[in-house]
Every structure is written in structure tokens, then in C-alpha cells.
Image (cartoon, rainbow, N blue to C red; front, side):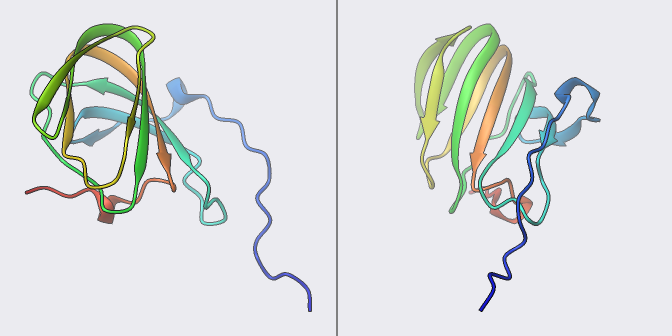
Length: 119
């Protein structure tokens, strides 16, 4: 029997060219959100002044700070971050980033708005 799973093809995204959307963190430019991709998505995020604490039941996120400095808040505990800092955020960890920061967010599996949760 032949495998009926859609084949994932290589994709290239110009994150700067993707229109930003509002998110709890600020403005996100999300790439690779197609049905056949079950691996991961990547988001270019500009953090807003007062980001909302949120969590995910299914997503693991990896943040990589591209520019700026501030803090990452994980389950209420703040840790300084700056350009070059990477953070792994497992499911169910309440989080937000504070400061004038631009970051890459890798979401595993790909981002699903139904898994963006608030207390």
C-alpha cells in the first residue's frame, strides 16, 4: 500500500516580506504554516511594550534573540536575555518576553492559534 501522507517539499520564506499579525507578544511574521508541514514553523517577532503571559499545551517553542535586550519570564521567574540568547520553552510553561526585542520563534509542531492559551 502506498503512503498517502502529503510530501513536504522544501520551502523558502522571506520573513520580512510576510505581513505581520498581532499576537500576545507583539507582531509576528509566521512562515511555513501549510497543512502538509507537521514539523515546525518559524516566526519573526517584534515584542510589544506590554506582552501578555500565555502558554501552549502542545507547542514547544525555541526563542532566539536577534536584537535587543530585556527579560524572559518563565512561570513568573524573570531571566535577562540579550542578542544571541536562545530559550527553550516546553509546553504548559507560562511565558512572555519583556523589553525592546526582536526574536525568532521556532514552534514545534507548527503554530496553531487554538494552542495559544491564557489563564
